[in-house]
Length: 271
Image (cartoon, rainbow, N blue to C red; front, side, top):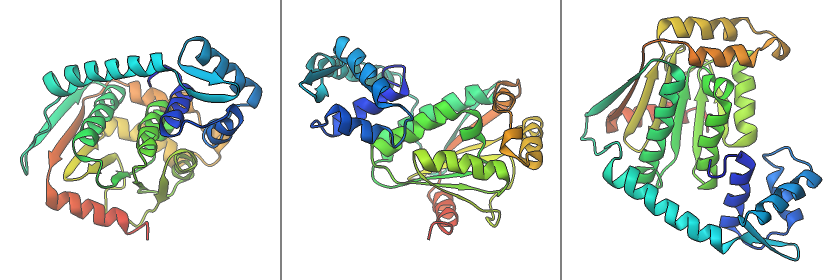
């Protein structure tokens, strides 16, 4: 997030795309994805004007030129530091792969988000993203970071297909959370892909793959198999699974044949 609060990012992204919003028309756009009253929205706008994030002429809003210059400078520094000199190298050859290991799923998810961003910058702007999760693990347990990922995709008008491989109550609940915010989601237990402990992201010829440790998967399984009412779901306890110590591994590989196979399987459920 650019300004520590998701709603700040949302406002910035809207004004970067279009600069003739009034406060009220911008509020109408924001509340499609953020639950915020108009009075509270006015307070946020006043705060952003005070700190020269926005400029306001009568009731019309724009990005403040001081902030635009700052963003240009920041972008150049980040580009040089992370994508030119010390970036994770993803110039993989066909069939080549890289493996990342962490001691928790939370740490692994940070790497996954970073890889998604790097691949998107290099290769992902020309075609959709494809996601398959056996269950809707991440949107239920890492909702803030997962929403940030999908917010980035939707801001870039990137088409995203997300398939969950089970149809439990929690899977549909997670799918609804994701669908209401960022993308099209389908839950189906008919897919041929793995029904448990498995997550893949496909961008172009790149496949980002996570297979959860068995111990972690068993804890998740208790939630998905036994939650019969949403009020029984304890999100704090579910989130704790992502912080549990375990040997976690992520693989990113370039394989055109496998990528096309995964895309074809996922797209069966979006026709």
